[in-house]
Image (cartoon, rainbow, N blue to C red):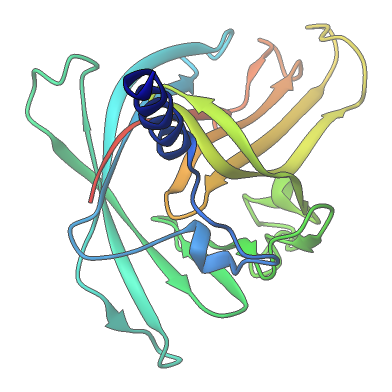
Length: 248
């Protein structure tokens, strides 16, 4: 009888620790969802949407990416910023990793800013993390100039949803995530018809506590029927990132 009770206790304790989640304080800070340290590496599957010659369709190519954090430095405002070096290879990781870009992440008590390789500054997260909180994530980007190639990024509302729920990625189910809805717009609305102009913008990112970015889905395309021949405009593209593993 004592042996049976002991086994019950062992099983109960094991179940408790196997199900234990990271403790997430109420109103956690944005930087807690984008942890940074030199040598930290995120590995993702990348599904990249591009347009082939003549632009009459969208095609998807798949790769593996790794984002490797470098040594921190002080930016022009005296804030601690981190370079992240992006590398790409095939989905089997048989080819050598090729460096394709560098972006910069600046976490503060108020937000997390990311400057991409086009020198575009995004406010990815703000504090505190709470459901329904919104902000203008693209407000530092010139979207209003007549010559701006980024007009499609204008006036986006970033909104927190599904705070501290689990989210399933290629790395498995990850606890304590937050979904950041950024855009879901088709203009003009309606089904795609190649006879008429249409633009599609969709963007969502998912971050996890003490983990970082675990999923991203971005799509921008513009269908232009005139002048002939009808085609997708050259700046049409899409990116899906899905976390595979992390090296800390």
